[in-house]
Image (tube, rainbow, N blue to C red; front, side):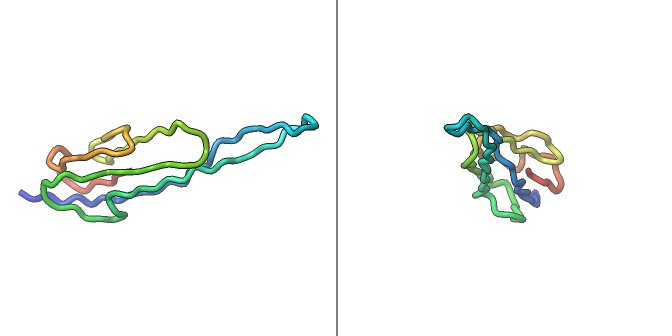
Length: 100
């Protein structure tokens, strides 16, 4: 039985870490380094059918590492804490999933 999964990828804009830098005269200056997140797979709004494994892949840059990743489904909860992983749709609950 084929299953249809609607994968909605929500890209959350993350504000970077705020740190203070002291100038030569001792005054502190606040600096914001923004974190940029790229979700390279699957595509935004992509509809996935069948039992073929799906690659989930993201990367982050900017700000201060190390970065942490958390992929979760509105139906199954946490799926992975890795930047990249494969998921067999047959291991997920039946229904439409919002993956963030």
